[in-house]
Image 1 (spheres, one colour):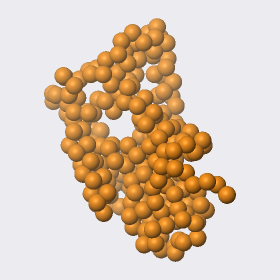
Image 2 (tube, rainbow, N blue to C red):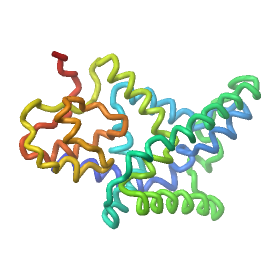
Image 3 (cartoon, rainbow, N blue to C red):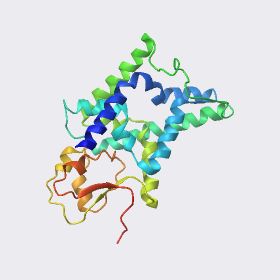
Length: 244
């Protein structure tokens, strides 16, 4: 319970800071900057998310992301599970977006400048009425998608940051070096399915346990399944259990 209180507190704090941090999460400003040869704050953040995911998976999504906080708030209104079919949508957004960024830097003749505070007002994203229009549009989009299509549907379908972390998580899972991940105790699951009901990403956690395969691209390592498991079958660890 204490861990979840800390997690929710961190998400709430991140959501309150969203007017400041909005442009550091912007998929548009990174494109605009690339065509000017500028490495923007969002470019630096996305690179750091990939590097952190090599050891922490998608923990950013579960513990820090302001969009995640908004979606967990909306889940209190409509907590229906999200469809797995949504997962593929984000790659159709991410792939051409990433290609456009690369083309932008090539067109600009490479990197000319690194500006972490690009298009912000002394580091603050929302500093005038026009920026508030962008802010409320993004907040509204995240809330509507999650309310209509299920828990954390924005994470599943539209998030442009998730593929960076999924790639890093895949590398971590492939090479099995020490990194934050889920483990389970084989043979002790009683199929109460509390883990399934409480997973904010609508994952079939009980199936993962019974298959002894806890790696999932959509797992955000929030620890909810570990908390609700009555038999303590699920746990988070850093060192991978040796394969038999």
